[in-house]
Image (cartoon, rainbow, N blue to C red; front, side, top):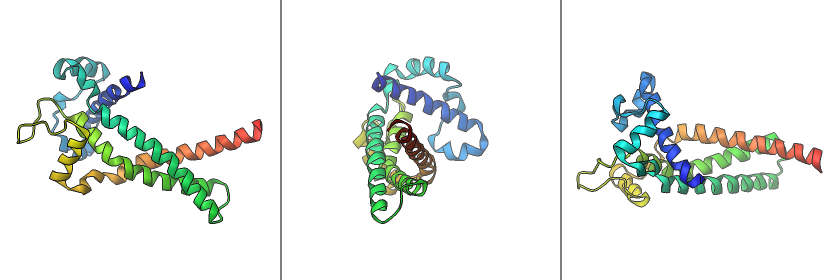
Length: 196
C-alpha cells in the first residue's frame, strides 16, 4: 500500500512546496530554474488532486516512483550501515559510549547517506517535475527513466550536477540523521534501564 501511495503523495507534496517557494520572492531565485508559472502550480492538495489527473493523466501521480523507491533503499542501507560502522570504529579508537560518540557517528552517517542518495534525489525531482508534453531538442522525452535521466544530466550538466545543492540537502538530511540516531540511542538506553 505504501509503495502505491507514497510516490503519488510525494508528487503532490513537491508541487505544493514549489508553489509555496514561488509565492515568497526571497526563495524565487532557488526555484526559478524550473520555469514554472504560478498559474501552473497547485494552490492546495484538493487542487492538485483534481488538476493532475485532468491535465497530465492519472499515472502522473506515480511519475518518479522508481527513483523514489531506489532513493529510499539507498537511504536506509547507507544510513544504518554507516552509523553502526562509524560507531564501532570510533569505539575501537577509544571513544566511550555517550552523546559525543553518537553525534560523531551520526554525522558520519549523514555524510555517507547524503553523498549516496543526492544523485537519486536529483533524478527523482527531475522525473516528478517533468511533464508529458516536455521533450528535448531531439524530440524524445528528457526524463523517461532513471538511467536515462542520469545520462541526460551528466551529458548536459556534468557529473558534478548530480551533487548540486549538497549543502542544503546535508543540512536537511544530516539534521534528520543526527536527531534520529541521538533519539534512538536515548530510547535504547531507557529501554535497557527499565526492561533489562
